[in-house]
Length: 313
Ligand SMILES: NC(=O)c1ccc[n+]([C@@H]2O[C@H](COP(=O)([O-])OP(=O)(O)OC[C@H]3O[C@@H](n4cnc5c(N)ncnc54)[C@H](OP(=O)(O)O)[C@@H]3O)[C@@H](O)[C@H]2O)c1
Image (cartoon, rainbow, N blue to C red; front, top):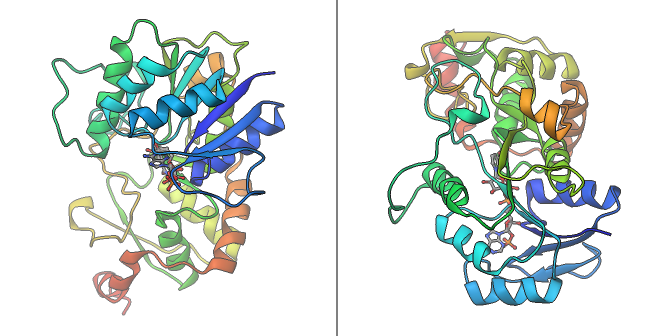
């Protein structure tokens, strides 16, 4: 039986990944910094992965065949994994590391590892780009990368999906970027990302030194909003306007027209066996959470300004 250590296993995507791994009969040990009550997971270890000694001890204690890493943000964390992980596969969960592709779907090969040495104090996106760059330089670490775009689902701590549900529920209109709201957008359901992570942990597949996109296919921001509208029985009233003039937080997914128009799934379908779910299923689960939790996206505080722009105040 394969044993997986899931770093960040109690987080938003981590819980979905652990559930899918356990469903597939993988012995799953979740990990994070905080102690979590017995019973939340079948198996759980608490340690801080940025402390190399703690990482080393945890790897010696658990002896995983697979390390699924959802808590890696800086290149030195990759170097520490390379020094201490002795198992058969390291799965790094990255992000949309792609350069600006001006409205073209991103293919995995659009990211090219960087040159030189990693600078200090990297922000989120550059941290992930350097993590992937470090992986490309590792000769002995059997790595595979999963690249999710913006992920939504129940308990989405970014609350970006709530921003759209709130505005559909209040009757709209929703301010959206005229340049990109009808293009494919970089969006994914948390359950699908958990599924993609579990596929990447399957040791029967040869996925060494490969990166894979995981996302909805062909879904635009307009489709997402129309999906929320039809699931809630409200109209989808859109107010397209230039991206550069959108008030802060009005459309947290953008999409920024300079970035890629979502992802190409050709490689992940053929090699990983990934297939995204129906939007309706993702929205049904997400709306069930929203109706109970009633979260509010911080950008919703500017709603009066948005309505004034759309002439609907
Ligand atoms: N959510 C998205 O839209 C999205 C999109 C693209 C990529 N991703 C990537 O997917 C991964 C997971 O994202 P997420 O949204 O699930 O994040 P999350 O909910 O914040 O989960 C991250 C988990 O990692 C653990 N963690 C953080 N730092 C740690 C450390 N130093 N040592 C040990 N554990 C640590 C945290 O648990 P403790 O607090 O207990 O330490 C937390 O449960 C991240 O790498 C993120 O970059 C996410």
